[in-house]
Amino acid sequence: MEIALSNLNGKFKQLGIVLIDAGLVLLALALGVYLRFDWNVPNMWMERLESLLVPAIIINLACYYLFGFYRRLWRYASLDELMLIAVSVTVGLGGTYLYSLYAGMLPRSSYIIAWFLLLFLIGGSRLSVRLLDSYLSKPKGSGSKRKALIVGAGEAGVLVARELKRHGPKLELQLTGFVDDDPAKQKQIIQGLPVLGTRAKLADVIRQKGIDEVIIAMPSAPYSTLQELVGLCGELGVKIKTVPGIYEILQGQVSLKTLKDVDIEDLLRRLPVRQDLESISAYLAEQTVLVTGAGGSIGSELCRQIARVKPKKLIMLDHDENGIFYIERELSSGNGEVETVPLVRDIQVRASLEKVMEKYRPDVVFHAAAYKHVPLMEMNTEEAVRNNIEGSKNIIDLSSEYGVKRFVFVSTDKAVNPSSVMGTTKRVVEIYLQKKAKSCQTCVYCSVRFGNVLGSKGSVVLLFREQIARGGPVTVTHPDMKRYFMTIPEAVQLVIQAGALGKGGEIFVLDMGEPIRIVDLARDMIILSGLKPEEDIKVEFSGLRPGEKLNEELFNDREHFALTRHERIFIAPDTDRDEQAVEEELESLRQRLGLEADQFSA
Image (cartoon, rainbow, N blue to C red; front, side):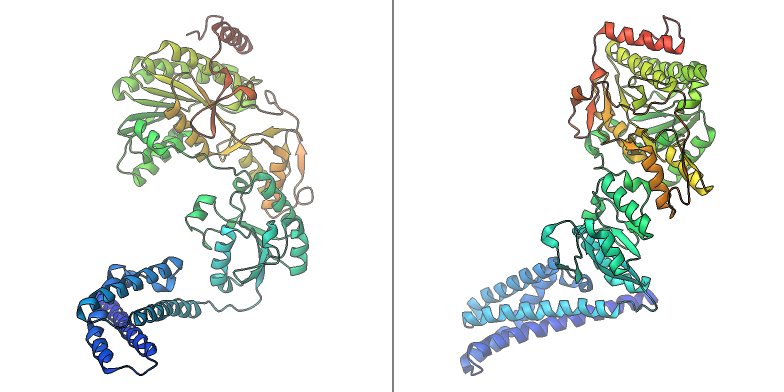
């Protein structure tokens, strides 16, 4: 009953709008004629006007209807709606003029006057709806308000200002102005707010205006800029928030809900890796896909993203039963269209793997299963070799035997000039896979290298969060240690994209920007927790652990990488080397791990 009444009220409301538009058309035409003759209209023209009014109303209302006037919420009217009004009024009056050629014309100048009047009357009626709605819906704030400053007066900053002006009073938040480095914007007024200076004057503006909260509206700002802002605001005791990425900004998806406290991921942002969705869909859609290590951080995200392109079957394999349980439950509840097969298996057991390959016959394999903790593997070399090398060899060989079309191995930047057991095992598998790619004609093998992944199990970020929660100290191994970082979704996009780019034996590497000092990361996290480094939380240096390097590398020779059609993915220079150089390196790696001389040759 309530729904029926609501629909009825809506129909009456639309009818009222139609009647108002009819009256405005009538008024515009009549005024057009009266103004043309200075209010002394001859009888002949009056008769023509009276005979034309009803057809004119019908023609114009029909145009308004066809252009969707009565399906729009005018309280949200924008420039697009104003353009629509101009086109609709022009078409409507044009139709009226054409009709009058046969039914009796009015003076041409009266149509021109009526056109201007209709633009004013129709546009004004719609604009008044928006202004009235804006006034009536404006929240009434009370009490003292926190003062906010927006850093960045571009498109994102304007969208944030518009939202906060609308809802700020409810949040007891008062916008003070903008800070922006663009010289053309200095001392200008944007959205009724002044541009108070450049970022160099941010500290002075915060002190002079008594700012309580800073909103960073620079979605493409580099790490160094965000780090500088976070450090400054932390020193001044000012709360800091940020907006989403550039693609959400371009889609207009900025609201109070999307404003959030700055997280460590925001400080590590770079231009995101873009997927070539068509090529990804082409080789994964309607295919049987196997993911090893599917219960881990990378493996589970691989399963999520692969499921979106609708494979025929997704086989999720891991020896961690908890990890498999959670990702299988997540995908089963959120994506019923994809058949998922959760398998608890150990890649070290070849016979068990062979049964899986024989039963399911996967078309594509993503091999993410591995032991990854560097210091831990230094103390467990045999297990690292058994799992990372022998287990990988099992899945690589079986993929060739059972007709797998594409095989993607998840490697690491620690495989470049490896100093650790973990990095060495990964490098051995890279070499074995490259040699396999040359001898196998049926399967495309390739590897993917990337750096540290934020939020993954064992990530230094998780360790720092735990240490900060305990009150410190935050331990960093060395003040000069640097690492490349990326987010889990970004890493997985690279892995999936590599599967589409691979032709056989390549080692793909993501351009990850500049490496970041771990001590800076630790201090940023302390500031983001609302604390001050050294005062509230101490930062201590514990020394390099076994197998660790001060700086990781992505390429053996960064100057000689090869380009791909993907703007952020490169091919490592050690992808194609002569047989003797490969054997010499492999022998060196075998000796480092204490392996037999004839082990793991293709």
